Image (tube, rainbow, N blue to C red; front, side, top):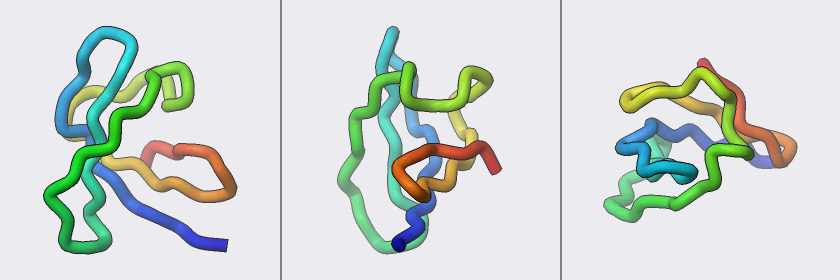
Length: 56
C-alpha cells in the first residue's frame, strides 16, 4: 500500500489541480472534486491512501 501527499494548487469548477509534495515533480494531477473532501480550498493539504483522499 502506498501513500502520496498533495497540495491543492487550484480549483476550476468541478475539478482541482493537485501537486505532489512527497516527491520532486512539476506535474499537476487533475482530479474531480467529487473524489475529494468537500471542504478543500486552494492550499489544502491532502493524503491519498487506499484509493481515497483525506484532508490533513
